[in-house]
Amino acid sequence: LGGRRVTEVIDWRQGASERAAWLGATAAIEVRLAGGSRVILRPSGTEPKLKFYGHWLGDFAPHAAEEREATASREALAVLEEVGRLLNAPPLTRA
Image (tube, rainbow, N blue to C red; front, top):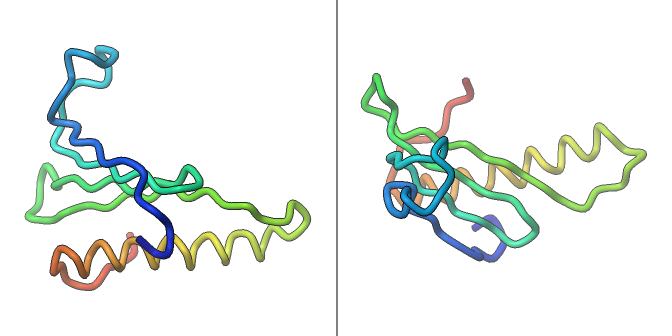
């Protein structure tokens, strides 16, 4: 996804009895990527929508905060757009 290797896919509806009580079963899929980034997909509880959450990590120069933010945003958006295409979802909108 977005040029990063998928390392694990977790279906949060399964295995709740093996997790901490506060991590119970929920309708969500977590896709973990190489480098520690992840994308979580879940249905909205109030609308007919699929929600995407991206947690993006990368190796960035510590002195270039604006460049780091722009690079991370571009890479994360590329992953979310690719997931959307795989699911035949409408284009992303920013909240």
